[in-house]
Length: 519
Image (cartoon, rainbow, N blue to C red):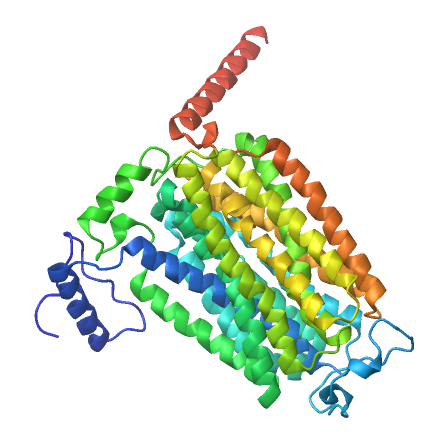
């Protein structure tokens, strides 16, 4: 290729990626020259936000698609009990037809619970390493390579199930969890570099709200695919989309504004002016002693446990509830299972704009905004899912109750979800890894608890499951309201961390000298 590649802002040319060729470099050169001459129309922090949103969306589609697909992978369980909650009269014609057991597996409820929870066994392991690597080297490849591995394992799912059945699927899901465990810590580390305080609720909530639309997309598209094709097609579709996302991410996203070759000088100056006080490119190593003694951190962990307990219970098992209790056929199951999360997404975006407006206008302090959002998102969903369990077989009312409950859960995102960025922009990746990693343990427990408590999938058993969810919501929210904070913590300051370590080292040397004199 002749001629030099144009540069922007004095940066080196766009990096040559491993899978590139001269044609790719030529397109990058053309793009760079256009940016140089005309300027960037969309701020690069919003391009990052959109790609981060798509990262979470893809992560959740690959994680969640099994929840509805497993209803078509398994032989329906013929329970020897009478449950008058949903009589046979409301079952659709599709449900009354003989089920073809070809390519289906005889897995009981406990085995299915084990399979669904196994993802989180690997997921919790890579949180902390992922966050620390993202803080040290940047989140671009910590996130990207983790997502790529998850996409590849998703594509391999049909082959592994055919070869190893339940055991093979458990092992594969653990490996998927290992790859996806870096997602939130890496994104949080990058958000700390790209989001000014006054846009933190909106951009952070946009990125994290990919979880809702990912759940919507997974349930809705899985239902449509399963209606017309066999279950392996679900994994091929979502795995393929994940690979396409990775290629796009590597080409257009960067760790921070200073590394980005196409960002405008105006945006770099804006981000630097708004973030230089609390965000540093190379802060000292994590001050674990102070972080683990911080009450706001433990309050955030408690809120994360509550959120994940309710969210994972519904994300993982709501399709089974719709199928086993309300007798929805697979196509309708995908639609009604997706609807609550679609409404939750709209709610989270609207609540985020309102939260930032309240903070910037001084209507309410950042701390109280975080507490209010978390309280609404805890009590509201808990109450409405209990109401849904008492609505018996009124399908419309049950779906409406779940939808309203999940809409209220949307305020978690401008509440506790972005609170880690408030507490410590410098160590946000590690903090997210700690908080989200501990919360993710609920993903291990909740499918197992549902498998044990609702082993026969009756209305009464599910009602018990939902009462447990409400109890966890209330307890964890009380802890958050009492001890949470929306202010930057003292241990985020690099100068404090350096002084503290020097003082501790000096004290140790003095104590060592004194003990030497005495001896």
